[in-house]
Amino acid sequence: METLRIDRDAELPGLVTITLNRPDKLNAINQRMHADLQEACRQLADDAEARVVIVTGEGRAFSAGADLGRRGPGVEAAPLAAANAAPSPLLERVRSSSGNRTSAALEGLDQVTIGTVNGLAIGGAVVFLACLDIRIAAESAWFSIPEVALDIPLTWNALPRLMRELGPARTKELVMTCDRFSSEDALRWGFLNYRVPDAELLPAARSLAQKLLEKDPVSLALTKSTCNALAESMVPANVTHADRDYLMLARLLTQDRNRS
Image (cartoon, rainbow, N blue to C red; front, side, top):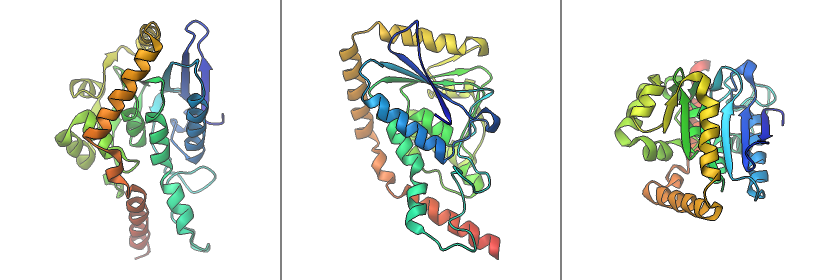
């Protein structure tokens, strides 16, 4: 795939590694990456051999979050319409929900998922990690949720997922202040399961995957589906059903400010 590398582990049958693969852009998430991740999840939905999925980033970052660069093929957060183009609100509404769909696809995987955080994870990347079952980070990894500082709300159905993982007070603090936090902070707050030296990150993820692959596959699958159902009943993601509309409104307001 254009923005992903998908590898099946020869030594650990049942393990698949998805690597976000735009290292020159710090693996920023554009429309092409959304489409590739959604397609990868569709393929895994029909794969009875894959039992554990590691998600990581190529190069020096897990991901810099949504691609906020200039409009072009694959750019995620572009203006609603160019000045000389007829606006297409429904098209922009579809584009604005890309992150919601990708997050749901990752969270809905039957396989046990392991987020493996190298380098930085910003904005949408933190949302993706919140959709995964278990999270491991390198000691040097750090996190940030900067959307409010960029004059846009945090969308992609992120708030319910962060509430589940971090609790209401910590979620409000991190999303509203936009403060950067370290892997040590993330471990202490319960967002991470493990924090390991940088050189041990992928070996630690593979070791955990091996431990999971040794378990009874049906018992493991039932445990995951039950835990997901319990989490959804605690803080349902669909309470943020208007996420994409808030995002569209924020972009319109930004355009109005820029014109004035």
